[in-house]
Structures are given as structure tokens and as C-alpha cells.
Length: 347
Length: 214
Image 1 (tube, rainbow over the protein chains, first blue to last red):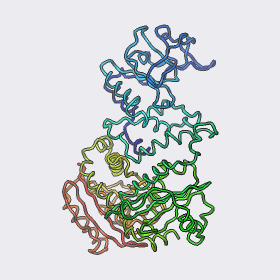
Image 2: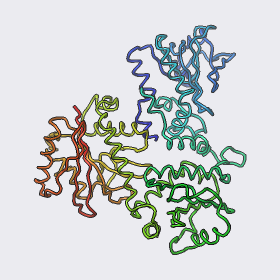
Image 3: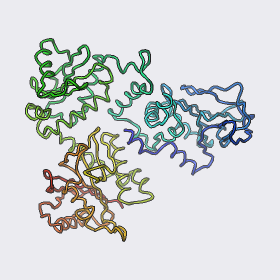
């Protein structure tokens, strides 16, 4: 999915093509104060404007009361960057989007400036609709896709800090002419949801009180059902035929592991319910204890066992109870592996 | 042991059912390929240079975009030993299909590295030959794939002309008539089929997709 998205034209390419048409387009980080020993230039723009100090996820910006106190700066972008209309991004991942503000006009002063914590795009007045298009894509239309993409390609996010991104990550956001390419398939949506809901917390140690603990919680029956449905939906385009399909079967949760049955056979013949005690004793226990067909399985955390049962070709997944083993993205992975087993088994 | 259970116990999933993944893919290629030369991917990527690799890059981008990653078409995929194939198609994390790409006519190459006109079929870099020899057409576990493909980007002459040329090259390679290409149809794209003996495994089936790129 990242590979596909990485092949699309980027936001940087879009701005470059606009800049070729009109050189007033400017795309840059804000000014840099610099250290005590760096070469600096006097910044004339400071007295002509107000300083943005924060941007909210709702698109609002906050003005600093004191403004920039340093009068000499190491890097000063083209002053027109700070002249409305412009877009300004904060270089962090918000909970819903990359914080971005659209400054169409600013009445109080001539300029509205920002430092290198932010990235700006200035466009000529006649191209204001292009700025709106970028703003709407990032803030509303593809907010989660862009969070997902920035998170996965960023060299700093989840490495330096959990949410920090940099200008290069914004440069690389996919921005194709044909926005249909940003619409996601069902499988892509599953990956996106898992990354933003669960894997995003892997950037730091998972504590009992941290948000990442949800990865280690016991999987619920609802989550298990969703897992089974995703598994079946991944395999049915290949195997569903003559009123037969993959279906969710029974499940059982022990103290430390969960068993989930997925079966192929006559439509609507399996139902999602608990194994009863007798079935566990007569079917599941011998399956797990079968050391001939299942050599080494007792030492693995994840097992995939095959058995024909009551008219259904079944795969039994046996894994620890933690949610992270039963996510939608893992169901896709299990379906891939099952496909290969079936193919190699001549099916 | 797992495979024995599937082979011996499974009765509901018919033998060879997994091949439907390939049939679905072939259907998709046939459906999407006619629009490829008019796509922005084709125009943008081939704006500057038009060699074989650029054609395959734009083909991969176009095909992957068009199906929103249901399949992932990737360029230069590792095969047996140090061999790489022009295009590999993934379904999820599994490499299910490989394709070798050729320009027709074959570019002349350089003085140091001349290229033979029959490169589609045999010789150094021979498209079909590499499948026959088992260097191309393996999945990501190194198992031979029985179904693979070739794509020809045709710059001059028509499908019929290349059909007769390619089949003559098959005879020139001394492979026999049984390995000549069968025409399935010539419309806006050409679809052909051939079956070849494989040096180390079962026969290899090749689906040939031809498209005009001028």
C-alpha cells in the first residue's frame, strides 16, 4: 500500500508544477533563529507582522503576544511566504489530522510569520482555489490517509518522538491529479485503521496506563468476529464457488489463548458461537495434542491447524488472547499464509 | 504434515482452486491494459525516456493504481540466483505471477552489448527461454509458478507481423511447433498463450499480452 502511494505524484511535485507556471508560489519552512556561532542576517520582516506560535487541529492559529525576540536570524525565507494567502502546517501528527491553517487574509498587520517548527505554502491570489484544495485534502478529505502515510514514511515520527514529522514527510504526501487514486480498498482501510488505532502506540514503551495497552488486552468476541470476517473476505474472491464459501465458525477462549475456527463449505452452515465443553474435549484437545501432525506446535505462540470437520474444510487458528494477534491486518496476513498452504497442498 | 492434511482430508475445496487467483488477475490485466497507453502514468513516466524499463515502470504504476492495490505490480523482482524479472505481481504478501517485458522490435543495443532481434524468445536475455530454463517464474518461496506472463510493448508493425515473427523464432530455437504461440485474440490488445517444457519442473504456461505503444 505504501509502495502504491509512493508511486503517486507528491504534494511537492504539485507545488513545483504550479511554481513553473507562476514563480510567486513559495513552499518553505519558516525562519530559523540558529545557534550563537552561526552566521545571521537582520530580519526586517519581524516588525511588519505577528508571529504564529501554534496551530490547532481545527485549523485555528494562535498569535504570540511577544513576537520573535531575536532580530537576527540564521535562515530567512522569502518574505512573501508570510503574506496571505498561505497555508501553514505544524510538523506534528495530530489525533485527527496534520494541523494545518488556511490564512486567506490577515487584517491586523502586513505579515503573519512563523519559525521552522512550521512549513508554509504561499500562492498568488489567483491560485487561492489550489490552496483550498490542498487544505481540504489534508484537513478533511484524506486526513487519516495523510496521517497514516506520514507516520509510516517519516524518519522522525515514532523514532525521535511519537508524533514529530518534518518537511520532507510533508513534501512526499501523495497528491495526484486524479483523487480516485487516494480512495482505499477495503484491505487498505483495514491496514490504515490498525496503524492509526494500534500500531501508532508502538513508538514508545507500552505501560499499564498508556494508550498502547489496548494491544495487550484480551481480544473481545466482537473483535474476534471481525477478524474472522476479514479472513473470509480475503479468501472468498478466490475460493467462493457453487454456494460454498469461507465462514466464521466456533471459537473458545482459554486462560491464555484463543481458538478460532474458520471453515470452507456450504454457505451459512457454520455459525459464530462458542465451542461447547464436549467439542473442546473431543475435537480441539486431540488436535492440539496431536504431536505427529502438529510437531513443535506446543512451542509456538501462533498455530494454524487444518482439519476436515462435519463437512467443512477447516483451519483452526490458535493464538494468545492479546488483541494484537487478532487485528484485521493480522487476519489479512493469516489469509495470505492459508492461501499458500492451500496452494501448496494442491487446492 | 500440514500439507498432507490438506491433501488427504480436504474435500470441499476442489483441487486447483487456488488458481482462481491467477484467473482473476488475468481478467484484470485484460480489462485494464487497453487504457494503459492513454493513462497519465504512461504519458508522465514516458515523457523523457522510452526504454523497456520505463515502459515497465509505468505499467507497474498504472496497474497497481488502477486496482487500488488489490494486486501490487512491482518492478525488478528477485528470481533464481542473481536473476531478476521485470514485473512481479503480489497478492497480499505472496508473489503469484511474474512477467517478462520486451520491446518489439528489440532495440539494437550498444556496440559492446548488442541485442539480438529474437530476444523475445531465445538467446542472451531471451524472454521465453529464461522461463524454460527455470531462471524466471518462481514465487517468493522459490517454488516454480506454473502460470507466468510476457508483455510486449509494440512500437512498429502490427500484431500479425509479430505473431509470425515470434513463432518463426520459436522454430529457429529448435523447440518444436508445440511451443509456438497460440493467438487468443487481437483487438486493441493482443492476447496469446504458449506452453513450454521446463528444465526442472512441470511445463510452464505463458500468457502473452501485446500492446501498441506508439
